[in-house]
Image 1 (spheres, rainbow, N blue to C red):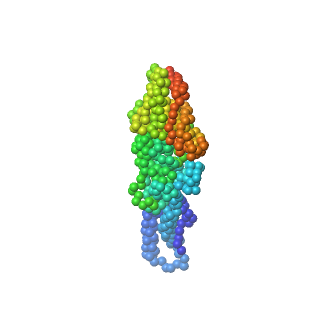
Image 2: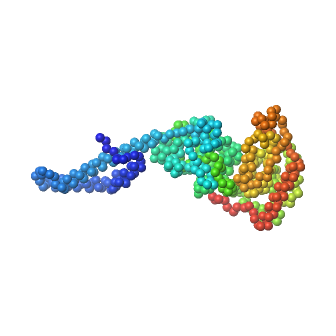
Length: 489
């Protein structure tokens, strides 16, 4: 009958068995002991043959002891290789038992953002008070297992897969990628600067909290489908934040789509900024803002040492959908009010005509940002803390646009800005259906924005007066929103 290790249940029990032995089966110490026993045995046999004693009815005590030692050595020599064979068998079973599940769980197709989402639906996030929700592999919650991925589908996330595996028992034919891997999930896309920023800010939060560790690579998913690039604005912002251009993993070295890839260390984000406290969000945006200014060689110092406070008022314009129907009139209203306040400078810009660093510089000089609802408002976090935002909407949004119309109000709060309200145009194209019919939103979404001279002038005057008062108080106290160095520098 085949002998095997007593009580062998898995890799851990094998380690326990090894602890019971005086030495390792593969150690030089064991080899020396076996050699000594063999030499002793030969000597005793030689002595016995020289003595040529008559046959005794019972063996001598010394000979009996020698036989027992011989039996013990032979038993251990046979048993330990069997232990190794059993361990190899169990390891192979662990290799074969790694189970891959679809990244996109279609059971949650009707509620993809609820609960723990349809992305890696069997996993639960790590939650620490005030910190961003995330998953990390290996970790205590993963029981030391690594994250493995399989599939490169760009059209259907249910054809891409994930699994967990112990480092000693990775799936057959798996490639192990060294270093830190950031795995991002975005329900929208990485080209729109608002949606893209929402997906990557949590990685900056994790980076700040975990010794400023830099990722080796990024893996981008949209609905579980692979994406291989970020928009230029977002890519440059991440380069500024982490000190190196993000390497977006394309798995070009993996020739077979069914070949698994496992990661030495991985961090997964799938709830955007979920879980972060208000103060933690502001600290993270402080980090990103500061890094962007350093990257673009924009001074971290503000103009707090001047006797007359310098107030930057910026009209950040759009073209096409949600642009002003009469830009000249709108610019004229704010220009007139700005002239009434000493130190006020009006700047007019179009974000689609500015490079990333030109946007960073413009925002560093802006105290009041005036702009229609749209992705360009994402630039607000590049202003100093406590700067002001004034937002404008076309007709019909209040009833039909849902909670998405408030994202820049939220962002102002998260990044430490002050949202000064929104103006909603009561006039615009008429919808052939009732005002609250969802079909009208397709008409209103890209509507253009009119103006109300009286309202705009009063609104601008009130905001300017508040900003002037605040900056005068700061100047008298010799306070300014400046940063000598950035976190993670």
